Length: 208
Image (tube, rainbow, N blue to C red; front, side, top):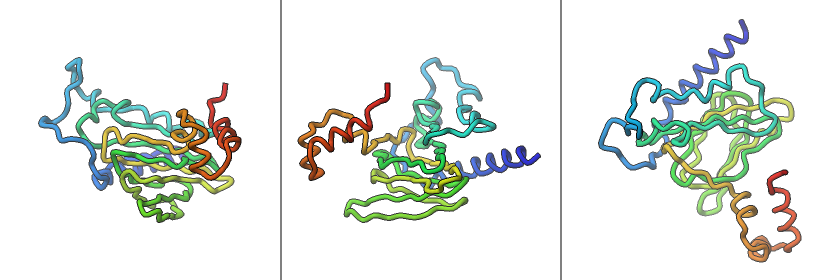
């Protein structure tokens, strides 16, 4: 009975989160039809339904930070609708590393646990907050931001709404250290040596 109550509570919070998505800044062009018909021309209720989040119900918690997305790539019905969603799962002590979404603001709703969040504006001002269950936090469009579950025992769960069907993601660590930027450029930029840069790159390299 407790499990059923927990599941119903989760879904009520999930449904509520969709209502706040209109607050996120839209970044997609307007369309001149109600919706964009898929290439195969088949449109019924299934086309407008996304079931990818069902794995959250009764599923085992992840051992590392995990994102489940409902964006244009996963849910084609979002094409032209200027909206997408993501569920962020944070085991204890995990982080969503600094990143940006170039095409949308992000409106995060904390469902479970606590999170330390923050972003840096174009004047290099850092804005941080510790969120509790039920809190909302907005990350302005295009600005570098992060989330961190500092709790050593409890997981955290958050739902993020975006004002674009394809908000985009630019991971700062991956962009700097896994894309082939010259070691000397990075060493000079970070005022360190090439050996340190190479260690950072090795730490971010895909594990075999």
